[in-house]
Image (cartoon, rainbow, N blue to C red; front, side, top):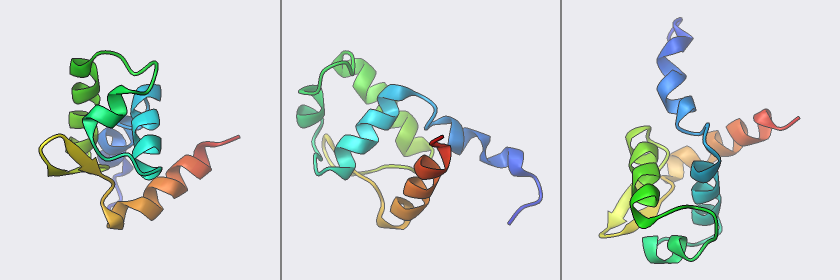
Length: 89
C-alpha cells in the first residue's frame, strides 16, 4: 500500500454524498437500470442521477454493464461494505 494515503481522497470522496450512497445501496439491492433508479424518491433529476453515477464509475465503485445499466464490480463489493460499515458510529 502506498505511504501517501491522500491518493485515496478522490475514491473515498465519491462516497461522501447521500445520493451516491443511496444509488449504491439500490444497486446492491438488485436494481441495475437507470430507469429503476429514477423510480426512487429524492435522487433528483435524470441528469443529476447520471452525474452521480459518472462520479462513482470514475472512482471505481461502479461499472457500466450496458446502456443505462450499472453494477458494483465484484472486486469492489467487500471494500465498499467495509468502508460503509467503518463509517457507522
